[in-house]
Length: 262
Ligand SMILES: NC(=O)c1ccc[n+]([C@@H]2O[C@H](COP(=O)([O-])OP(=O)(O)OC[C@H]3O[C@@H](n4cnc5c(N)ncnc54)[C@H](OP(=O)(O)O)[C@@H]3O)[C@@H](O)[C@H]2O)c1
Image (cartoon, rainbow, N blue to C red; front, top):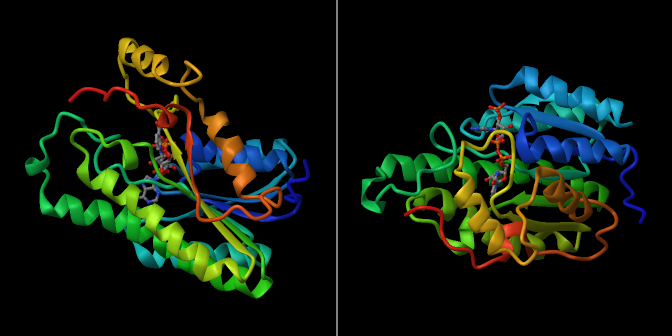
C-alpha cells in the first residue's frame, strides 16, 4: 500500500514516550520527516529522534506544553520554519493531571473544579489549539491529515476520571465539526480511541486486571503501542483516501470490557 508519506512532514505531539514514540518511529519507517514534541523528556525525545533517523526518516525535536498555548504556536512555527510546512498532525500528547493515568477509585465529587478546568484546558482546548495552528498551512496546500488520540474511556466511562474522559470525548465532537469545516480543503480528520495499551509508561497494573481486560477483547489480547501506531499511520497518510470524521476503536476499546477497579 502506498502511504504517500516519503518526505511528508508529520508532527506527533507527546512523542517522547508511549504511543507517541511508537507512532514517530512508524512514520520514520515510511520515510517521513517527523517532528517529535515533548514536555519534560527532552532526552527521551532525542532517543526517539535517533530511532526515527535509523529507520530512514528525518527527525526534529521541539518542546510543546498543552498547558501553555503560546508554546503550541511556537512549536508549530518552529516546524514550519524548519521544513516548510506540516502535512500531518497526530495530536497525541496528554496531560494526565497527576503522576499518571487517573485513579479509578476517586469519587466524582472529590475532583476539584480546578482539576476539571486544568484537564479540559490541556487535553481539549490545548489539542484544539494544536489543530488550529496547523490548519492554515494545510489549507494552503489543499492536503492534510489529522489524527486525534482519544481513549476508550471516552465512550466506555471509567469510575473516577471524569475530566479525563470528558476531555477525550470532546475530541470526537471536534473531529466531527472539523471534518465538515476542512474537508473541502483536502483535510481529513479522524479519532483513534485506544483501549488499555501496554506502554512502558503505564503504572503497575495487576496482571489479573490485564488478563481480565484481555479476555474481554475480541482478539483476547491487549494492544501494544506498535498496534496503535500502525492504525494512526494509516489514518494519517495518503493511504487514507477519504475517511474523515470517524472514531476508530483500537484493542480493548472495541470490547465492552469490565471496568478496572471502581
Ligand atoms: N496508554 C494507554 O493505555 C492509553 C489508552 C487510551 C488512550 N491513550 C491515549 O494515548 C495517548 C498517549 O498515551 P501514552 O500512554 O502513550 O502516554 P505517555 O507514555 O504517558 O506519554 C505522554 C506524552 O505526552 C507528553 N505530555 C505530558 N504532559 C504534557 C503536556 N502538558 N503538554 C504536552 N505534552 C505533554 C509527555 O511528554 P514528556 O514525557 O516529555 O513530559 C509524553 O510525550 C494519550 O492521548 C492518551 O490519552 C493511552
